[in-house]
Length: 170
Image (cartoon, rainbow, N blue to C red; front, side, top):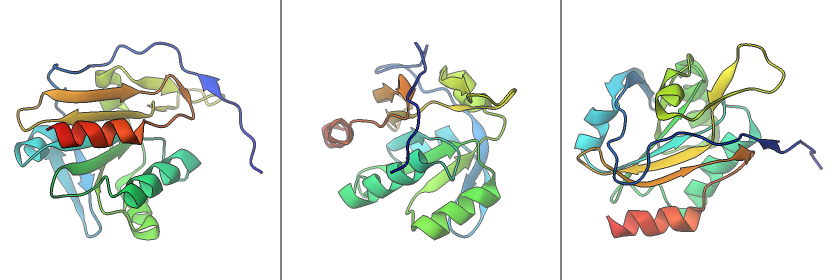
């Protein structure tokens, strides 16, 4: 059995339901290529479930994507699911292929997007290395957040039933 410490992340000052989602432009990776895309371009094509997750290779990232696939939450008829982490486009492409992820992933090695969302945290014991907290934001076609969840400890996972209910309520 793998053992790990649960880390309290403290409070976060993140956008919440009814607020405009902060826009950004980063490389958006799919199974074939990547290109710089703004979040606003993505949500203009339909609602977006934006999932911030730890760097690729960390078990919470794998667990998150496996759970979404098993629950069929990434159903593209209702919502576009996109992830975001500090991993590079190359690492994202590998994760998409190895885990059979049917979603696109934003690459943000500088962690600036997590800082804009108020959900950045220092990785324990690694000076100068930050990543986003686990977080989920459901964003409608006008960029308004309809559902927000941000983890208060590491590891933590969103309530998938709540996400499904929020998607159905769109």
